[in-house]
Length: 299
Image 1 (cartoon, helix red, strand yellow):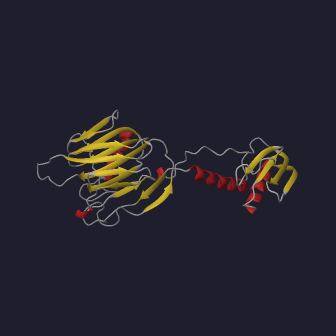
Image 2 (cartoon, one colour):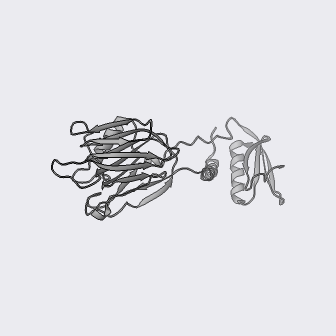
């Protein structure tokens, strides 16, 4: 047996309030890019505007951070390795993908409570990494060994950032959907925060910009347990509600369905938002709405 429409509406209102008190991990969806070439000279001068939405951690995650280079000291056949670091604060279990066209030695660190399942390296030139102890590293680098695409801008940038092709490749490799992307043409450091935003040392003075993207699935996943139906298995019965206050107020209704009793209970509560109340059905508590803990003790 399901809640009636009014019962579901008010039950949803109370559930949202409860989740707000419990709290969920926040996230920021960042458009980035804008007009022109995202991530390249002449592009916008900083991260794109964002929409902040609370979101839980929706299981294992996949994060991609990309650059073209960590320094500009290369030309022709001269490609000295650079260095870049990534610090992960996101409190989840995740795979981290690091991509660079030029050779880079990556240093990965994590905050307490972070579970890093694996680090995947991708690059046209050699990629190496220092990672936390016990974290496996997979390297796909070199002209014949890379994943075939490089990413430093979202959704792409003319002249070499085939971000979507790399996303497709790493999703196929890992068997999971992309959670977030952060990139810049030239940078030496990224911090992935717990809310999925990222700070970086993106070389804005050279005309580059950081662009970012967080998948919609990371902000609207449904990992909360279903709400129990208080009327499941109940037919017609006797409904009673009482205000838990000195001013009193109560109602006693025989031969009413449980759904109607719940509707009446929630409706009376909405009309008296400052008063605690208790509703019973066939003598059992159907709904307890206390504005302060213990307000209905003894009622």
